[in-house]
Image (cartoon, rainbow, N blue to C red; front, side, top):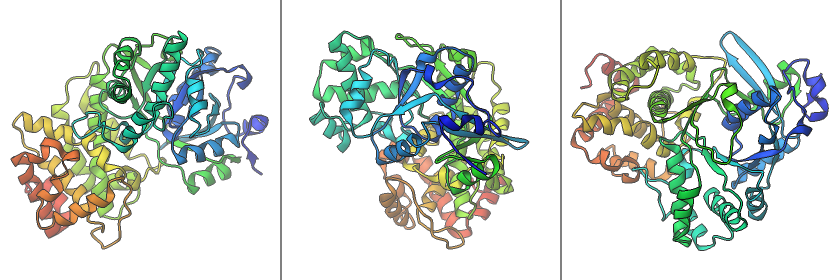
Length: 492
């Protein structure tokens, strides 16, 4: 027998899953969150659920918002179950389900008037975002791109915004005009200096229609930097079936994640914040060392193993890590080229941190997939891999392994695995990446000519040679033999 998830059925659900210790009737909104996806519900929402379970800060509940068709689909799924979510935390030795309830509504995507009105509500003191690394309109150098069509459209019609940043600007203007203290904008995406990047997107768009407003924003609005971490795979039929068959819960879109989670943040919230430090959030004076470590080692590690695994027809991340060539490749890459260019992190041994990452990647319960890691490489490679490449080149150091990562990505975009299986791309730039990868068979520099991705790194003669050598080797002997050659030191 199964139970459909809702507020009315929590007593029945409590037989197999932990349920909130607080009444949803006591919650009121203090946060508007853009991008109600799996990661948000496994991370920020979990911390707030933990906090509310202690019996405090009930005026910091979440109202969701979004601008994409997928946001409306999520709204419909969650509204059907009173915005509750079943979260299944999985480590190799245990699995446990909990139902979380910190979200009380999701505003209709596309209803800019309703979203701006909520942003103007004095009760809303934080606006948070998980809109993916590709949602910030930045180029390979990390600069805001004012020429993106979505930005041009919002600049031309600031009273009818379509982007997250246009909506934030409209909400800030409404608060300024009403004499209401501005909200804090809190980015929760995997981007170096994510608060600053978000500020640049907001002020960059504002400047296009109101040249005076950016100065007001910089003076009055806080954009704290943060580092977020929890491996959270996509939800599919498998996850929905497990929640139904194992826990007896009919959840339209449950979330699976690892037990580990981390959130490090600057304490810069002029309008106030929930007491998240009581449930494990680290508030520090400077986030940069932590985000540098996580983005380069963990996210860079994911980006490194995704493409050799895909070329070898491996579907799950833990299976990739069970392959000695891929695991060895990751370890050598991290230890030889990535970790040595990461600045020290307070109270942290970087080698121990990498060992933790290895164990997390090996977790079979998560069933994280290689297609998830391989998606959106045009946004992820410039943030997770190429900065390490650039740092080593600037220091006059070699980039054999990092160049191999880029070559594997290029080889992946040829569109077939080593066995001849078709590869299904999931990248906004897939068509031009595929064309460049095909051209790179004859001229490797054709792929590096994607300057919005590779920037000046693609012009470096050392990187060009290493990339060309690696790509040629992949074509000649295949992925597995190339990884073996790298591990034996024969690729240099």
